[in-house]
Length: 175
Length: 132
Image (cartoon, rainbow over all chains, first blue to last red; front, top):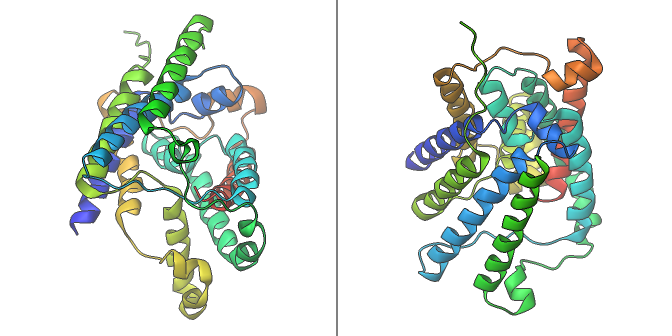
């Protein structure tokens, strides 16, 4: 019960911020894919940088565990490409479609229905995929600091500096 | 009086605050943000209404049990949070066609609906394949 309440409250706060920054709009999402408006990239990277620092501090203090997914190239590469095609057609991603409906952009409902269908189809295809593509290029649960053999703080610092340079460039270009 | 729609909060600020919300979620509830697993569990719950026996035997629904849990409430919360925010800032707008879409593809709601639906199928299949 407590877990459900945490989910709801966290979702409300996140949805509030997504709407305030206007990142759940079709025009913003497609604007990023067309390299016209980088609002969503600014939002995503800002939250990733703050989140990465905070989560690794918690991890170093022994207060949290990382949730690392397996790197399976046979899944990630075609999956990412297929996701991109669908995202470009829909103009919302799974979480933002719910937010889009929340601010009245009800074309998100068609997307939600499509995504439920897509999930059902994936469940049908899973037994086959599990034996084929999902066994290709399986590196297990790896992280960049672990593969490079360096401190995670070095990786985080490099990421943040690169991100700030990217932000500077976006602002200079008015994206 | 004419209102010019405000441009909202800085995406850097809102993004950083979202990062803080994420840190608190990991710390307090041990939960990382995600949305797509919810579509799997929900599809499973819908299918269970029609053929519970079949769903019970499907590999993927054994792995991702069809049930209401943290993430489904999180996704529902995103809907509510967006509703609250748009109501407060008075930019809730009942809209079937995004502006950019309408400029390029015209005013057919069916065309938009079909494209969004097909896009949703493809996007979710890809997201699940990538494990995201």
